[in-house]
Length: 167
Ligand code: GNR
Ligand code: NI
Image (cartoon, rainbow, N blue to C red; front, side, top):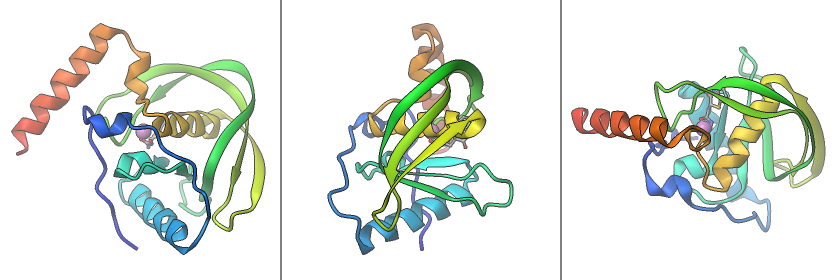
């Protein structure tokens, strides 16, 4: 297991589009376990492979406080969505920034697990928010892109300044 480096916004690599996993194998499972370890160490409730500069459609989510409800989604799709809900979101790639984003309230996701088996999951609340947030990462979208251009510019300037100060 290894803790991987999380890309920090604004890094262009966060905007790459991930490709599908063709075969779920040992290398996939190693990456999943590293993603989980990196998410728990951060700590965060989700992590997408994109955030560690691996551009494959893999996300991990665990919204439990006890860190024992890991959910792995390989090649995830949202096959149904309903309702709308506002949630204050944060992102491990955009540290210290919390903003409200509007998303579907309930979703049905379909994906493969770490054994390569297909499953579907109904989610609502934080779990639904988190799955949508992570799936956005796989298509190169960071949550701040839902905000006004003015807010995005401010966030970018703030994080660039912070990066300079810590180098
Ligand atoms: O740790 C995280 N918390 C969070 C809170 C509200 C909405 C979404 C998230 S996901 C985030 C981890 C992360 O950046 N995943 O990509
Ligand atoms: Ni994120």
